[in-house]
Amino acid sequence: MNRDLAAQQTVLSGLAGHCIFGANVAYRKQTASVSGILVSGPYIRTLSLKAAAGRLLGPGDDRSPGAHRVAVLAHAYWKQQFNQGPAILGQAILVNGVPMSVIGVAPQGFTGTTFGHSAKLFVPLTM
Image 1 (cartoon, rainbow, N blue to C red):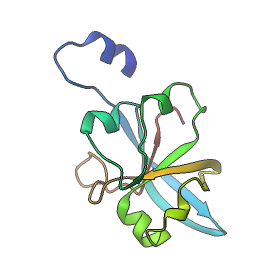
Image 2 (image 1 turned 135 degrees about the vertical axis):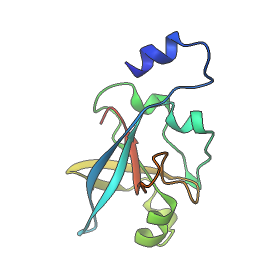
Image 3 (image 1 turned 30 degrees about the horizontal axis):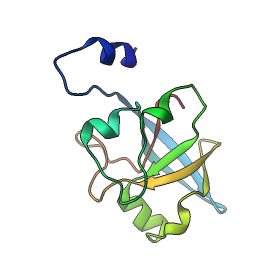
Image 4 (image 1 turned 45 degrees about the vertical axis):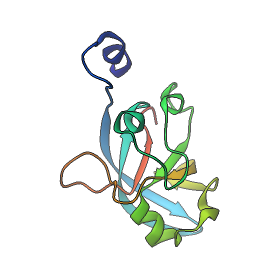
């Protein structure tokens, strides 16, 4: 539906969707319960964000349900849990039992677009 709305509207420069979810994240035998955001493909582009490391999610990551098992970490979470190490890029983490490859880190200070909510990771809405 989000893609249909975006294709039909002519007033806005972009249209994106998101949904907050609870995530159990596991990496190297350590687990954490964090808050994440499922985001539509245009979410990052609409906000004109630039990655702190790696790349951010794009429209291609949100095309088919379950097809793109990728995740972007919030900068503070990357710093706290992964010591700002570039080695996490390309590594698999488990998010609610689903293996996902870490493709990037969000810019410092960005934790989502919902007031009062601080996301630790971002994954495609189709997941």
